[in-house]
Length: 130
Image 1 (cartoon, rainbow, N blue to C red):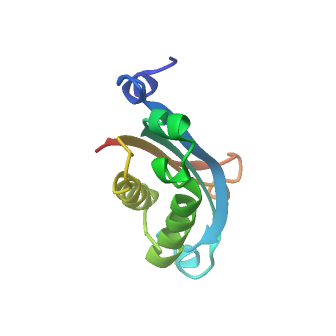
Image 2: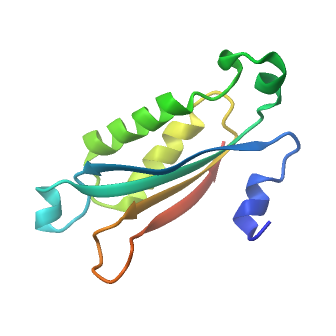
């Protein structure tokens, strides 16, 4: 465990992490005039606190989190909402994730790779509990 948010995600017994890392797509996001017109790359990562023991024992897909559905829903949300702030998008994604069955907590990272010339990306990371 490297920091307090890692500890928070792992503080429940039988809690595992299902993740989607570096989901990249173009969307309208930002407050600058050009950002309101031209889609730009967004890089999203999710860590979802889920008890996977039932699915592991049953070997039944219906007993686990459908991460493919969630990734598609997150991308659709980001493209349709055209948020002004990455903070707003991160919160909306957290709300969507926490509405999924089995999700107890979520860490959402939203990055804009082209926001600063000298930085790999800038963005926000939030942690929310159900």
